[in-house]
Image 1 (cartoon, one colour):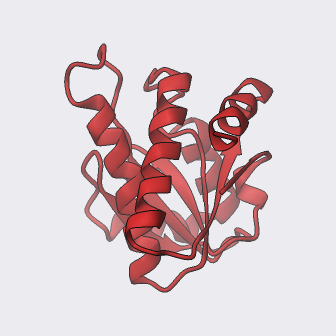
Image 2 (image 1 turned 45 degrees about the horizontal axis):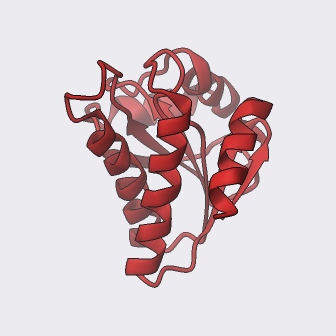
Length: 165
């Protein structure tokens, strides 16, 4: 596991994760950026998936992206933390890794799920991400190269601190 600051749409990995909305039809932030970079075929394939529930994950091709696949996951909207938000966010990471394993993929890049317009506190989200990924890799003896792709220097510092522990 490592953390970098980059544009996730440029990464040459087996799969990048899209912090999607439940329609899977594009939106703002990383969701919009991934749809724009992948091109119209991604939207067409997403229309066939019938949406996605919070905490779940679905896979598509990467189309024009450097990544071979996109794993779409729907993070929770932050409502104070007492409505299952931490568990739902952990499920996003776990389900995404399960999809990677099911498809025999070896590398994945995650953005900060739910930390944009869904308002999940970045420090708590980073802790959940690192703990969930670490636990999954250990419990499943999985050999998956995991990248936390950070938008800001502040987020990068959060992830690097957590990964150093």
